[in-house]
Length: 321
Ligand code: UDP
Ligand code: MG
Image (cartoon, rainbow, N blue to C red):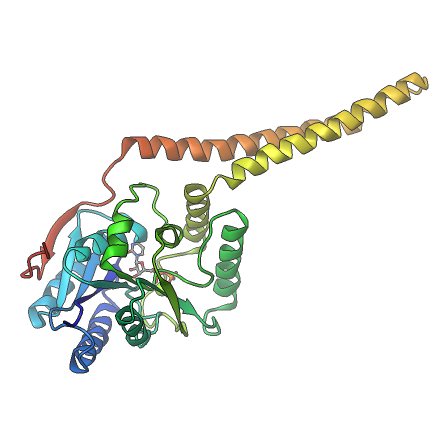
């Protein structure tokens, strides 16, 4: 039997792109159904992430025009990762495979065919990987690539140049549902699931309308989020740094003793004040990093729900089992 495919699209203030995105995704689904690659029960699932514009009424309208379009409405804005998770967890019970992509069509939807083919060959997770970033602005490209390098350096293993454009099988999603973290960074968690994985290359286009919802500030906090929720490497680096400085200070003590024995006691307040500042800075930095982790523990211990759904449209298909 042909697999049921769900395409999950998180949307935050995307009224400018939605009609076109819906049109192209619908075409893609129909084309895939036409060549018998997916079941006619396949759907596109839009997740409205507490948009302030007309995104939700638009999604309802799209559903009224075509039964292939469904939507879920979150109770408020929860951020890209949580919106995506809401979509994936809703789709998991209804589909055999789920593809996630952004609403702005920056990810080439023609890569969907290759993803579905790989899934049919038995691959559980197919990562969409950007072959080049030619069309991103210089600034976006360097900051984004720096982001991946920093992440990997800090011990958060991610797939290079892969954003959240990927296909996951139902059992991979079942695996994902067992990761209960509130500080969610899907790109880092998905590789931990395992199973057979593969990649599909595609070219990343420009956002064809509307503004990026990821300005530099948000991207930086996303990077800190990702690193601190995935790895304890920064804590280890602090330990290493502390040890190194301790060694240096041992050397200093030895040096000072030798000078003192030589009767050479120069009052070196410059070096003293410098080291004071240096140590003060390092201590504050270290406290800050530890604070990040303590903050994470605090949030995890609360185990708040990661998303709440207000309404689902187009759910005439009851969940499979
Ligand atoms: N998005 C979301 N909630 C948010 C911010 C963004 O659901 O709080 C969605 C947005 O609608 C889009 C995707 O996340 O579908 C990626 O955002 P965007 O394209 O603005 O990011 P960029 O491609 O510039 O990194
Ligand atoms: Mg985008």
